[in-house]
Amino acid sequence: MRHRVRLGFAAAVAAAALVATACGGSSGGSASGSATGTAVSGGTATYAEPPGTTPNYIFPMLTAAYYSVANIEQFQRLSFRSLYWIGNAQGQPVVDPAMSLAALPVYSKNNSVVTITLGNYTWSDGQPVTTRDVAFWINLLEANKTSFAAYIPGEFPDNLKSYTIVNAKTIVLTLNGSYNPTWFTYDQLSQITPLPAQAWDKTSATGKAGDYDETASGARAVFSFLTAQSKDIATYGTNPLWKTVDGPWTLVNYQSGGYAKFAANPAYAGPAKPKLKYFVEEPFTSDTAELNVLRSGDSIDYGYLPAQESSQASQLSAQGYTTTPWQGWGTTYFLMNFNNPKTGPLIGQAYIRQAMQSLIDENSFLAGPLKGEGTTNYGPVPVKPANPYSDSYEAKGPWPYSPSTAVRLLKSNGWTVKPNGVTTCASPGTGAGECGTGIAAGAQLSFSMVYASGDVVVSQEMQALKSDFSLAGIAVNLSSEPFDSIISLLAPCTSSQSSCSWQMLNYGGGWTYGVDPYPTGDQLFETGSGSNSSNYSSPAANKLIQATVHGDTGLTGYENYLADEVPVLWMPQADYQVSEISGKLKGTSPQSPIESLTPENWYFTQ
Image 1: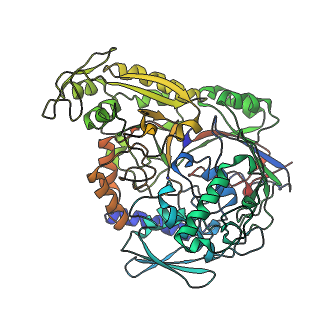
Image 2 (image 1 turned 180 degrees about the horizontal axis):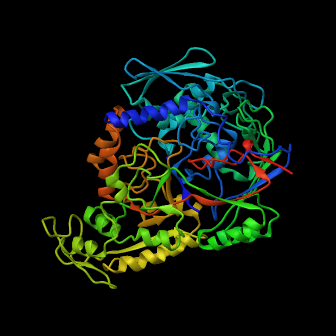
Image 3 (image 1 turned 180 degrees about the vertical axis):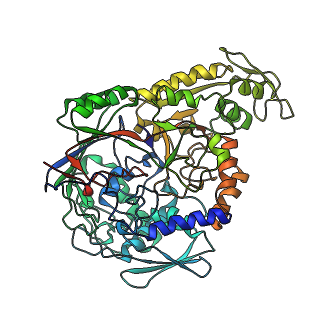
């Protein structure tokens, strides 16, 4: 179980192939595979939430503190759909036009003008989804962009010169330059979530909806109101705001512990109308607690098998469950804080990060705690599922496990290495063979690490990592906290802020390329990005990222540079989870590469 929080000629051909796949359409989303037998109308399907991970933000314009798969892919998107749906009927991380609110965009004038045409979708209050709802999103974003986790200076909405509403179904975006169409569609337009202006464009619960968003001050007031309402989680099941939806599900009951019950939306106009009457997400504090309930066999239809309990698969099979690994489109890592006032100068040295990466025994983690459910991961571009982006240099890893390499790197840069002790700086300074900028004589390689509680595999990995780091005298002081507590710390910070006191964080996963499925680094690693939680900054990385945004130069230069730079500490890419699905529940295959849920495709058989 993992927690997630988004060309040369050959690469251009590969990117074109992805778009061509998307253009080919599908059978209506992620619902083939196991979809056999006669559907029984109605019923309630229960899905087990990841351990200690609960949805807690419903407004689809999130800050970094709430920017997670649990909130976006497995909560908000059930009710509020973005312009473009990622994940087709073959389980590929590409746009599925049949599941999208709009037809594929049309680019013109050297890829600087984008025309978007909406399909015939309807809000649950009977009003059509129109370009006014798209403009509502854009206006709120323009006035509140620094509060949105996906905002990156220079990108949307900064790269939007203007928009023109042609009619209720067509909107034209004029950009400030030429952009890579694959990147703009996959990583910019897929973020846009039309919002019901007729219900949400208001500044108070008792006020009438208007056109407040059409001025900056009004848009800020509306955003402030919606944000406050979204933080009032006790009212999620009753607040009329959240009842106006264009997705297949309406939230009808929510409890502060993370329990969420959705009812089928009869007004949903998408290709797959819900067959179930209700869909329930059930919270668990630990994977052991979930397994105990799963084995009882009477309250979970779609659960997961903890990796450390892989031997239980045969027992669950005998109970009628099907074991199906769920492979996500993402990369796994944990964070180092470049702006921590104490350890930031240490993390700022590439050779120290490279030494730490050389102490992470990914193959042992895969064979041990992960029980073979995953793959090695040494960079920002996923190796699996199969894709045209991953590079062999990154896939093999420039810094594979090698304690001798770690010791060499530290010694050659002025450190006295003390295996099983604490390594100290013996040669301060910025010259060759010295420790580096901001590191004083006697400085120690000692760090505090907070990791996600409730996940046995993560705990095992951290204990093993602590032991491996000690081989080069790097001390790691471990503590654990719930996932939601850890991600609340993920907003970028400066060294003077109290929120920047953390040194290392492992929330038990990494990044799923969901709202940004073209796997470049503008959200994760570009200077100033709202999701650059480690506060990493590199002019060279910025330049390589921008090359993927504005042209078709591909990802090779970017991904290889970041693999070598180690801006985060790469960990094995585990399967998102090993799903255990009731044999009576059909329509669940393939599982989404971006870890979204589509229970509108599910149904029971007798």
